[in-house]
Length: 452
Ligand SMILES: [Zn+2]
Image 1 (cartoon, helix red, strand yellow):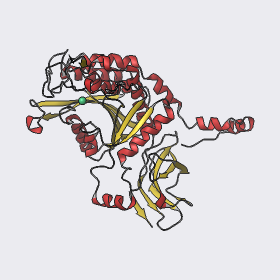
Image 2 (tube, helix red, strand yellow; image 1 turned 60 degrees about the vertical axis):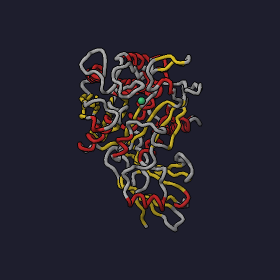
Image 3 (spheres, rainbow, N blue to C red; image 1 turned 30 degrees about the vertical axis):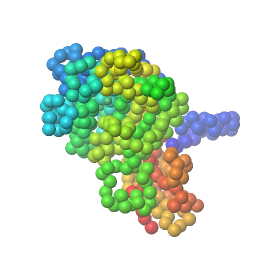
């Protein structure tokens, strides 16, 4: 981010040695702290209770009843988004996006049905076709995923993520953004990630430019099945490189590295960094893996189409409270009930999402076609295509090849190439981001080509 030095600051500099702290403070955006404050654990609790109260939200459950089943749940979610929109001068475009699945589409589909997502779009003022997405899931399941009648409150899995997306919409609809934000409830997660697949295909068909999807799946449990209690840690799962990478990209990776620098990984680093900057009380854990072993999530269908996407979730899972019929067996209580959700923690993780949505939606587009040069030279050169918009300039990042996070950075101004004198290309990984005049930054872009 840039540091703007005004006359007042120069005078302040002469007056007080504390200038340096003022300058540092200017690198943060006060509005981001406001957003953290505005996320309400109480509203999250109400919404999670309401969602759990629909009995089951299995994708194949009742769609007619107003009190039970997935139909009632999605109509309630749509009504919530509509209410939020009314309070912000119709700033949200709310609609159902649906796809029909049949028993032919998988072995966990009890009968043909519509998989219905509830989408709320807050259009960006400058780049309406660029989207950053926060998702939760509408659906829940009992012990047997084919059983769409038994109670499956799914309080943590995944009413917590769904409520988080609704709450983020409530908070962020009070602000205007350059890029569009989508808050979405996806269905069909438990039977094969159908809702995410449907929306990802819809995005592709409509030529949406996806900045990234922050998929929230279980953001309310703080008591691990191993007994660890921790209300500060959470995990950010990200795949290494897009499954859509081309042969040329694979070859480039073989010779120049980048196994841990795909687009989803850069998004994960972005979320990690924003959290450390604005919510230092939290402990974000970068997990270099698409998802947990043998488990899936709705960021994956987006990744499948080449979009950046990550999974945000609690650090300590409690398997007794996931995908279990409510019962007591050998003194152990099973079931995904409301008692297993910590609302303050869900509010923290919702805030993590909200500040990243805001920061990404306020940031200019990332530089395009970043290329790197400096082969058999003592300095590293980078060049890129500039982007339009309120761009203050570009920032080059680099780090040791074994380091998980970017370690060094240099703001180089509004140029399209730069030489890092004395930095040898072979010894680091490099990337470039765009920095807006408002201080917000795009994710870092890893070079996709070389030059001599
Ligand atoms: Zn689940």
